[in-house]
Length: 304
Ligand code: GLN
View 1: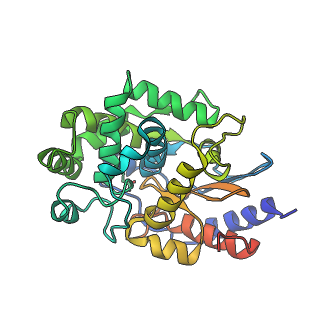
View 2: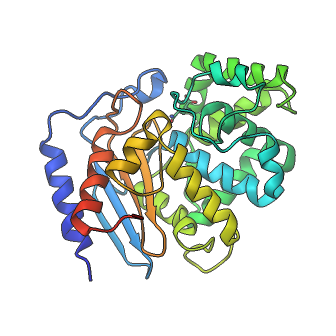
């Protein structure tokens, strides 16, 4: 048996001492006051054993990590029709860039850049009766935790400052790739990004991606092909213009958020969430990436 607890404890110890923790995202004002010293890891293995260290049970803003959960929900609802409106190629661009969207006539490169996630949000707004409530319910069920909530302050803070997301939504609308109105879709999108979860809840919610679509309680949410596709997208697009670097250093499918969270998984083996709020210049958690690199190096286990 691999000594996961020992490995993550050592990673956390080294991270606490590391002085170069990156920079907190301040473009969403409500995120700017988070303590940069927070650091947590939670790992769940395929037999449902849990390993936790540091601030793993403290909630934080999951931001773009939510894009995998919204993709999973919409993929389950509309199947492959999704790919008529969103491509599956890495963008090589930062998450909020718009130039490719115009060049490619309103079809976002992938579901994890903001424009792609806004189209996914549009699909959920079209298909769910009470979009925000139903999506929250879906996430609570995946994580088997009814306490998960939206942080309304974070959602409002992003609504007030989300000029680029308004630009993306308006551009999509002008190309006919947004069915509902811009404000309704962005209200949903800002809320999904403002989900507050801790590392344990995130690792639990992502369990389906390492377990052929089945959650920890055995219920099936996605089929094997859908899981394959979502994992492929996490590997190729989960870290925007740093997806190559993450695959190179860590070698796992994963997804980051500007709240400092990262979730990554090794199919059939484990699912792990890290939280360290300081970001590198590409908007990915600096110490979270380093922690995952250390984990796959120490265990010798990656998808490669
Ligand atoms: N809500 C953020 C935004 O739209 C999410 C970005 C991220 O986590 N990369 O800008």
